[in-house]
Image 1 (cartoon, rainbow, N blue to C red):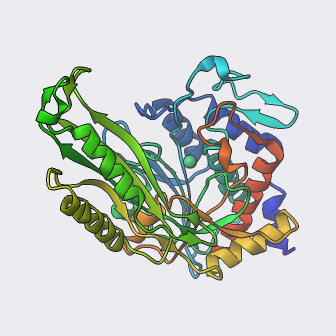
Image 2 (image 1 turned 60 degrees about the horizontal axis):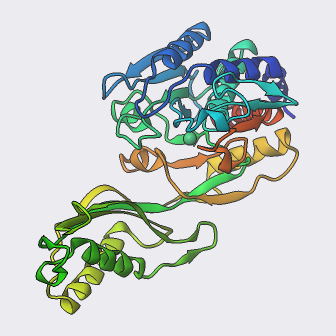
Length: 395
Ligand SMILES: [Zn+2]
């Protein structure tokens, strides 16, 4: 291991990483509704203490992104480490073995909402940047640390807004999520839309006099479940999911209108234009076979193509080299069901390579009794720090 790497790693200790993680978990930032005040105040305080140059953006009032920047001395490649600050609802409190915001540590495991999604990763990244400071190392390329909002709501005010405003100028980006230390480099596309099946009301005793929008919506569901789905070696099968359905008025009335919300996800190489065409053709065929069928226009709320970064990108090579030193093994590469903020930043033309990686089990996200191994949290801080050293360089 190089002398610089040793100096950096010697600064990363369990108490430092664990304190960051516990302090973050103890500050609820449940989204929705998205109350970021206490967690943002904490992150701002820590970044100030580390002497980072700080900027914030708030494209929606109350949903701030915090951008910390360790200026580069020149000649290196900039890198952005980023993790989101919001967490999902805790559900039924009684189903938690530990208070979800107490950040209890038992037998080397940190419990709590956000421990694995994704405050634990933010803690690791904070500790990584802190290590540069404490080791008196100056990166050659800029090192950014972004704590961003609006992730759990898949909203527009997160990391992409910091990039859009030019607050982050790094075309290598690492997002922290619980991936079991696997590099996620290929990502599913998604198309979210809703459509109304429009019926005609009648008395429930005379259904033949009306057109049942619910029946028609059911046919639409069956039809769209039948669009061609492929299998991807790293992403598994393409999926069609019905997220919501709303229709009908009361039990003895034939429903006039029924709306269905679809979430379609698929792997490369098909584009969203191709999937939209599949959907359109399937609905046209259905209309031909059922002249009564009347549909509204599709209302599309989210649309993105699949995203794939090379397995051998310089960023992935930097992470793998860090993995060999920190974990003592070869880090694997995989595919992820969502490109998160990578897609919107990439589609701004501001990304050369991106990866999602972090400690912890992916299924801990959004689960009851969410938890993460403390040892893995410390390893993540070491991994993020060495990745930054490998990408940015340092003096
Ligand atoms: Zn997350």
